[in-house]
Image (tube, rainbow, N blue to C red; front, side):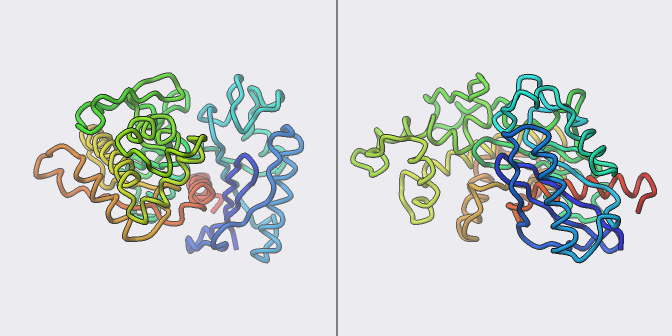
Length: 342
C-alpha cells in the first residue's frame, strides 16, 4: 500500500493522518497527536515530527515508513508559499533559530522524502473542499472561513490552493468589510491585532469577542455575569457555551459575527462565483442546532444577490480538529499523483 502523510504542526502538538493513495481512504480517524516542542528550536521539533510520524505509520496503521511516498506539512504562519518561516518569528516559532528557517526543505532532508507545505488556514480550506467534492473537485471553487482565536481560511480554485506571490493568498482574516452596514455595531471601532480596523478577524474571531464585542455590548446588558469577570479573554471563551444555552448577550455576539461573515462571503461570491462557501473552526464545533442557526444568520447577513448567485450553498466544515493534517495530506496526494509517485 502506498500512502501520503499529513502533518499538522501546532504550538504544542503535532497531529498526523495517513491517506491511501489508491482508494483515498483515511487510515487514521480522529486525532493522532505527538508533542511538538516547537519552542525548543528546529532540531528538537523536527526530531519530534519524525518520531511521531514513525509512531503513526508503524503503530497506528501497521505500515512502514517506506510506504509513505510524500509528506504534507502545515504550520501557522507567517511563512512563504514554499515553507520559509518569517524572519520576524511568530507565536509558535519563538526560538531564534526559526527565523527565516526553511521548514519544508529541512524536513524533506531529514525524512528523505518529498514534503509539501501549506499554512494551516489553507490546509483546512483544502480539506473542506475535498470533503465536499472528493477527487471531483478539480473543476470546483470554494472559499473557507475558519473561525478560531483569529480568522483563517483559504480559497480553492479548480481544486488548487490559491497561495499568491509571497504565500499570503487566502489571508481572509484581513479583508476589510463595510461593518457599518450592520446597524447593531455601526458605532463600533473594531481593532485587529494586525493594526487594521474593520477586517474580518476584528469582527469574527475569539479575539474579536474579548477585544471588541464585549466592551461594546456589556453596557447594554447591566448585571450580566460576564461583566463581573475581570479577564475579558476568559469571558470571551465563555460566550459560545452561554450562546448554546440561549443567553441573549452571547447570542447577539454570535449573530454579529455571522452577519460579518455574510458581508465577507458576499464579497467572495462577487469575486470568485464559487461552488461552495464553507465555515469551520472552534467557534462552531458545537451542536447541529446551533450550527444551523449560525449558518442561517450568515445567510441573513448577505446583501441581496442576483438570482443566479442566491443558491450558493454554505457548508459547515466536518472533522474540524483534524482539518489541518487532512488538508496537508491532500496536498501531498496532489504532488504524488502529478509526479508519478502514486
